[in-house]
Amino acid sequence: MKQAESLVLVPGLMCDETVWRHQVAVLGAGRDIQVAEHALSDTLGGMAERILDTAAPRFALAGHSMGGRVALEVVARAPERVSRLALLDTGYEALAQGEAGDREKAGRYRLLGIAQRDGMLAMARDWALGMVHPGRLDDRELMDSIHTMIARAGVAQFEAQIRALLARPDRTDLLKVLRLPTLVLCGEDDGWSPIARHELMARLIDGSRLVGVPDCGHMSTMEKPEAITTAMLAWLNK
Picture 1 (cartoon, one colour):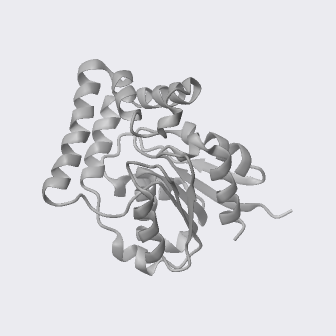
Picture 2: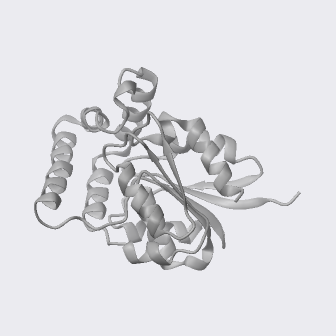
């Protein structure tokens, strides 16, 4: 039986393989899966280069949140190596100019200040409040898993990834020329990267498939793992 194409899964800000646990367990049957590790890379391009250094010659690529932006950097550098693309709860534009950009920068550095002063677990508890569906905030198993994952990354990695995100490039033009099977997925209650942004992304990417996940916030792969895995299976089999 022929081996399925390799799959690279890219976690987002302060996240690791925990984010992709359900997807690895199901999609890994007969398939080589690599979960990217960003280490202390402080540019999205540097994170992309780490993936290209270790990935198969050709592979399917999925990124969640900041990981979606990293996935776009991979495609920008080596489009011939990516067979299909999935962008989950993410974005593609550079830091906004003016007041909106200043607000984002201030918000990110406020969280960094909490991490430096009170520790990563305190920061994780603050950060996660806006990252999951309000109805899941009392789900201790889910929230503990998110908090522990974020705390595990450490302050140095958090600071490096903040620098990477604030310096992110605009990839609007890249979306317009993508010609590969692309899944655009978002929790319908994602307050950080809203569904409207993903609707626009899907319009920009020729032939892409948009999936909105009901009753789901930003941490979609952990909040609704079965729904995300089902959508990814359809994408991989397209």
